[in-house]
Length: 367
Length: 253
Image (cartoon, rainbow over the protein chains, first blue to last red):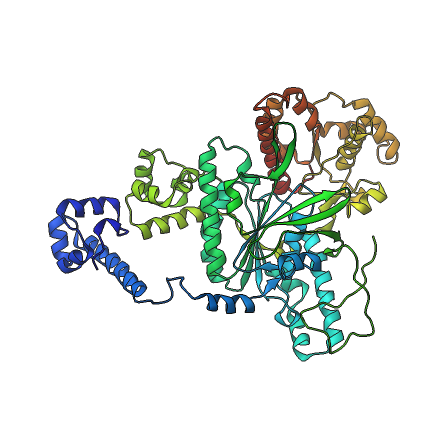
């Protein structure tokens, strides 16, 4: 109640008038009442009432916070966080090596950044994740929906159809092997049409559309509360050209990162960004580094760098708070994102002893 | 979209006037400011400013479509999704041919046949849909002056002798291929920007640029300081306009 008038979220002109009239704390405002307020500072009674309502809301919010209420606060003990993290699902990538180095898959509530040269498979992984997030819980998925924000135009529906068909077939194989009731029920809703209708696609052509879309995302996510994945494919593309003012770019990018962190936390969804590579010209050599500068490197919690080694595609976990740095090889097949070596075939031992979170090992065709 | 005036974003008249005093007239200016700056400029409270932000964002944001709707739209006319190159193995690898609605890049060392391929694809695009073409005009932006009209007629006559059996048909085909010779980066960019109206008026179904690299390498020497940034600026700007044209009109580029 001792809050100073200058810190209240009122219009600046109103704040200036209150300061000139000599009001110092919020309590004074509340004591005066709307009629007295309007007479003293010369505003209409309706405006005074509105201002007082704002003040009251703020003060109640403060009181709840100091009394240790929940909701607006984000305070909890580490034990609660541990329990939450252990029950949290991961979004698998269908490449078990990649899932392993990530600690189970793409984490919810965190921002993952994928950097790589053109053609190495970033958009493929994004499309794979948009399908994988919808895997029902009994098969080890998070049963969510996906928002796909495309700035480069590289989203191919036909490719998503291929990936989704392979995923559905995979789940059918598991269900046949295990013969459980809930598997069969889940499979009824996990069809191609359902998968495609739960990928929400936005095509942003420049950075203004991207900013506008991210401002509107919280509202969209509250309407579609099952969304568990937000993919922004090509966050570097709209910011790399036509920007004379680099400090404005840094400010906009930081604002964007902040909003994405809030979205990831509030809606318990994973945010995946793809970034381009740029050449840093040193004294004698030039190296490929992720684009958008050093300060952008702090935005993502987990950073994956995809690169080539002769003709093999490799993925390196570059930055992660809980896993160590390592490199694995991956493959892009007509079915989507996969491991390099097909794991050993185990036909005979399939049955009830299989862990439902693990997929059955099927042989991949060599291309 | 970015240059959309705030008036059309359904802000009130007095708000627009007030903002224009601070030189904020387009959505771009509005969205680039932070919340505190917006409060100062509009003179509104925090919550009001957030509401205004949502209103302006709604005016700029793209429309939502689900992947299912996109698939349905594509499957409505499957033949128009690709331009077959009539080379069966190439078509197989490309899943049907040169895709409509996106950019395709052809690169190779000199002399491999890129310009020949472009000429052949222009002939294919003018063919009627029943023969696997797009039945439309072609815009050919030539930066190396390598386009030969005689070669065009030779390819057409030899490849499709039954269709191009009369001179009239050949002339009709050549009339629908519009050739632009541009020799500098600036003129290429200007030409790309002006293409939107031409596409609608001439019913263009294919855009070919032969070639992007030659004009860029001529003008931008990468060893000079600062040229790298300008060159990538030019390239990305051209690429984004071409992508927009390809998607908007569903034509191959």
